[in-house]
Length: 236
Length: 300
Image (cartoon, rainbow over all chains, first blue to last red; front, side):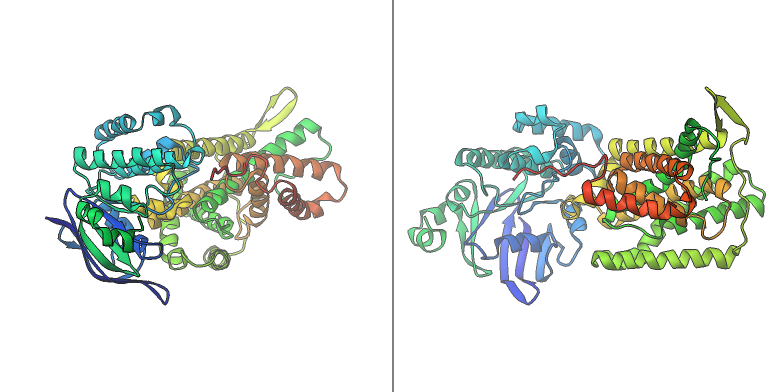
């Protein structure tokens, strides 16, 4: 079943059009990768979904139309978005960042359990709860951003370039966590990546964007095998 | 002017006067800091809003003969609701406007509230009943009025409650996050606009407390809080404009300095306003983050 569906979505920054009619489907329970060069519209697609940019066209989440709704109301429906730059609340402590993720929940017991689960994924966090998030390294901030999003108990998790600026070994660790979140907790994941190789390894299906429109799409393993796609769009 | 001390009395006595009047600056400075943290702008109407609240309290106590201790909490709650409503109606349309627009709007509110107070209650100077007994007590040879002790106590209590609210409650955390990181907060489902409105409500309530504390000392008229606002602003800048602790410490420092300047510098009564500005300029020149404020840490 489609959890998220975009149909001919057009978005602009001022007079510059960034998306020229993007259509895509995210199946419930899957991991979907969105690939493409710089400026292809990957980030804008995520921003369109959570209402951070004005859109035309249809966006449906769980059968409900969400295009044009305010960001906070879209988030409340169960969409967590880790934005470009990770949205780290750098002056707040690590624990406060996690608490903010759960700030709308009214089940304190389950929230505490979820915090414990986060320590299970990221053991280093437990000893650094009182530190301001600004003091974390880039990889740690990325992990904190994912953990904060998980505290919302979302149905759909949007990740904008989780590998950006991180060492390869850290990137592998983060993608492992992403796969675990997907398989253990059944969270549907849509991620934007420039690192096509690693994204295609984790993803079930993928969309390749080019100048604000979908150029190629298909199952991730098929796209990874297709040499012409790899050469012309993915650059590896 | 505020709690003008008898120049013949000793240094200790001047310091006590200074701390008491400084507590008044501190409480209004707290209100300024609360708004500043929420929207990074000074609310120039803070003092006039407080005066308006104080007039409502005066009306309830004189016209309806209510006791101070019933009036006080009621006016605090009314001011909170009024502050929230004001943000929703007046500030919300300019929420995303440049900072200058916001400041001009608060200057407009200054005139509106000042005019309203005058229109409704007139420009006659009124006495405002004090909740504290007038008789002083003596501590080690220094006379301290219950009035002074009350002012100091109320300011410290306010600071403590605000500290608890922002550091220990979920709502306080959500307000801090919304002010610093509006987009991240929205993505977590926080209704950021309402958090700003709560900030206005909170600071209007704190301002009302400040007004009801100062009115018995200064007597009530529509311009009650204008000089207080200047020194509260000095206190907030001195302590670090984003820091509630700084606001209280700054308030007390300004109060004591003013008392000392008033006693030992000839013709100082005329120089008090100038003195406020001198402190502001010196702080901004040499320690822009304030005495207690710290520069923000980031790692990139």
